[in-house]
Image 1 (cartoon, helix red, strand yellow):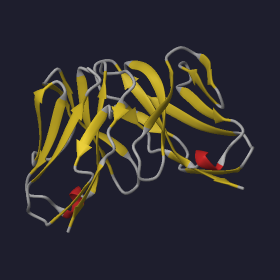
Image 2: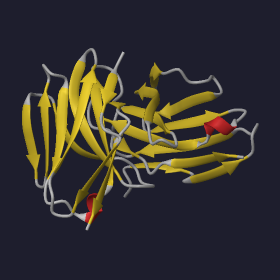
Image 3: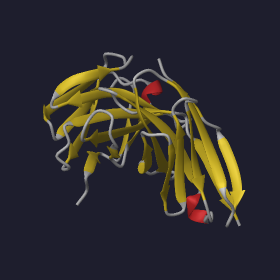
Length: 109
Length: 112
């Protein structure tokens, strides 16, 4: 089976940096995905890691350690529009993405 | 030019009714999914189809029946709706079973 854990809620202020952690236990691991979901909208893809290390994309970066079953999403220079849920998902060969329960991030001014 | 589109966006219906949600993707993907997102925002896989063939069927009541007439379409039919079926249902597609998935706008189903 799979187990994916991430914090339920986080708060931060505009301009700050926030790190959202995700730990997972799964068989047949085939990549770690991060999605962003604004209230009332569909999840949208942010990043994908399959090898250990850091992937940077503008203000967002994602890190993976396969040996530790650990990933994080780093958001820099936070903006109000970054208030959303952030979903960690694990890919497994031949099956669908399995999502964690999501972290709701609130950014205040 | 929407990549994954599902209809309707909102669906309000009475207990016991039968309803369908339609999904179409124009990305040329082979794999399509139905996910259910409950009130706590947990996104849970229900079904996965690859090239019209069912490959995943999670523990879902058999009142839910997916149908894929071709690889660009995956519809969801629900019989004898119950209050607990109220949720947002998302259709998604991907090029393969474990690559980036693209989501439709969601269908908010409310059973009264």
